[in-house]
Image (cartoon, rainbow over all chains, first blue to last red; front, side):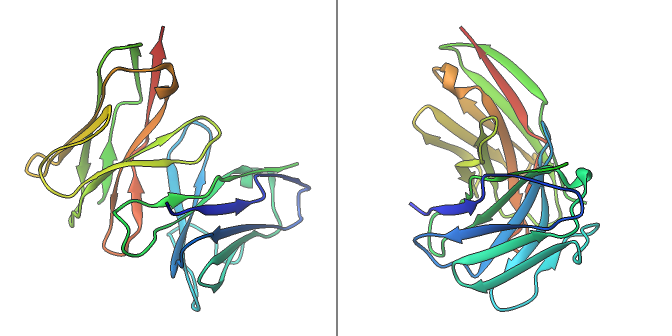
Length: 116
Length: 109
């Protein structure tokens, strides 16, 4: 089945620094990927839709200058959390769907970001 | 607006059957899906109902009633490993997926 690889799985960074998270579709091409944020014991909140070769589409309330998304190829999307602060600490998850596959999105394994 | 409602917690015993309900509200509806997420892990796709009725996949079944804006996930022969959070969700016109708040299922021995 479709596999989405996300890296790193855990990262701890100092307040004010930037962190890049990678999301790769390993055995399929994904023109669209999605980035979610999940706080403990809460639901997944869509942050943005990453489109290959074009600008990402951000959900209302998500700062595009803070959460930079780049989808440079059909298998890779990156999320950069710039000038991270403790309130950005969360579980970030990407997802994608293989074209032609039965319905259902494949999620990456997630990245636990802790800003200290 | 678009929203999904599901119970926050459900507790059941090993070997039993449990049903997790989900009601939704949206202007354009394409189908209802279910995901399982263990603590610290990523969501895993379980099932998708585009049409009314019951879809069965092993111990898990999912039901949809479009006229009632309602669906449920049925888990049979519960096992301890089924303890997890279960999310109902639906895709929007732009292929985005909106998730419910999740139901934490606790399976007791």
